[in-house]
Length: 157
Length: 199
Image 1: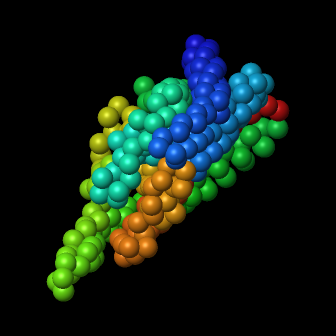
Image 2 (image 1 turned 30 degrees about the vertical axis):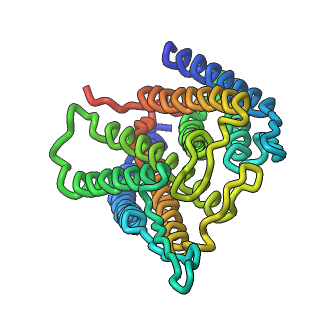
């Protein structure tokens, strides 16, 4: 039963992590005026961040549902498939958000894209925080996959 | 009741070898197609390069030209895309080799488990690469007016087309890899003995 407890704890931590990521990302908003140009930085300006929030919301909802369901019925195989799909979703969303965030922080001189972190530094800090939370959620889900796989082993004696 | 119990396990044992051989053939075919898809994605993106000379200014009667290159190495997301798809194609190749020739090695019964774990890890890495590359490509195609980032696909059309093709091929490989992972996990579960079923 300790395997079941570890998996419950991991799901709870992942739920908290995704909730934190959504909360920080949605409340990050900053306006800056530089040389008569106003930068209005919101998470909804970039489709990658919108995808990140949606994916974290789906993962958080699934964590809640699987927390409630894991005590009731042993639908282990279906939950493992869904775990793989949700881990994939989390991994792709954090990669996309980090890729766009890297362009925002360092720019891309070859494409002529200037970094924006100099103008909206508070927005950048909050996005960094939410990306860390999203990364923790992805790692937790990968560990959860390994745990549930371990409980399904058919080890020969 | 004795007749029922005696009849059922025999029928199960007869159908199992046929479905096992069929499922391993299907798995092998899926792995082959996934290998081809990820190799295509890696190669197309790695050879993705476009050079364009544009006239910047005209001094007198001689035009001043500048040469701009679009390479995949300019964007870290595409570099990660190439590396991750390379790893995924190596994994697929290794798994095909193990399926065909590696039936003797069993590693204390852990072989199927190791295959499933490696499949899951490759799914995680490849899905990250696909997500990052898709959104970078969308940024290059549409730009971002809020951050004053111009789109580059109108100048480098063939670079964008090749990149898009590589990303689509990688998505196909990822989808097949998810199906393969599901099948590998399904092979791991111990078949329930008939004696334990509730009467």
